[in-house]
Length: 333
Image (cartoon, rainbow, N blue to C red; front, side):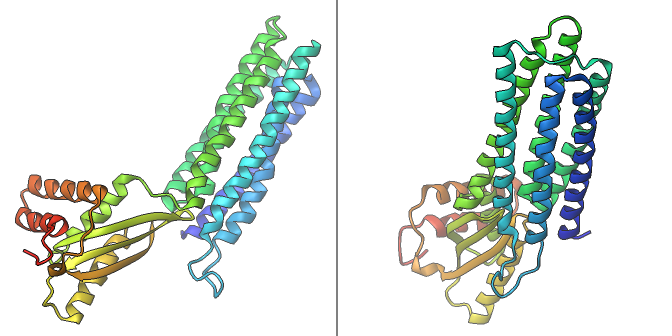
């Protein structure tokens, strides 16, 4: 199954499940008046709203490249995730306001009883299944929208558990635990919104990926036997995907065709990383000494060199790679 079909199917599953949960929780809320169950119904209603947004957003992001969007439409996904966050914040503040008002007025609502416990227990189990499902597909296809949805489902497990405790407390003669549980639910909802915003802002501002990925990019460049050094390694997010640019150093007496073949092989090796979209490689003659002072690049190249030495293979070439990167003599080795 390709990425488009996979993420759309997840969106459809999420929508159907959340509609069913709204119906179940809303029915119990109507019958019992429990604020804890009602807050969970509001939470699930917000889930339904953003499920529709997800479906629409994923439809756009999975469209093929066109003239106006030659790199495809995946960069829309962080915006979809932020829309999800807005809905999550709205639901969280609504539940918090309701719970606070209930405590201040002393109107604690009704006890949900066994029916409420059954609905909340089933909700927690269903949300755990959705969490695992969305996380697996989101990580496999690098979809920030699905990963944001997974986070929301994970926190829904906690909020359903808090509501469960509130219902138990109310049934045991402590009705204030019902709105108190609703308040805890609201905090969980708000924290989910924060997590979604935090994770997706990096996609929008072009932040650098984890340092481990830069190490792997440099390692793959050095894996080519004709690459004698590398510098100016730059990787950054463009939407949920990563663009990479770097300079590699080769023997200066190579033909243009030979240098082109090396460049192509390095590009293909780095592009095979699942997170990476575009790779731009500039080929330099190593004799020019065009490397630049860069503490991060120096650290990464030493790590690659050390790993090559520990492996007992290619250690001689590893030294020449480090030399090409760090040698300050412009005349070359």
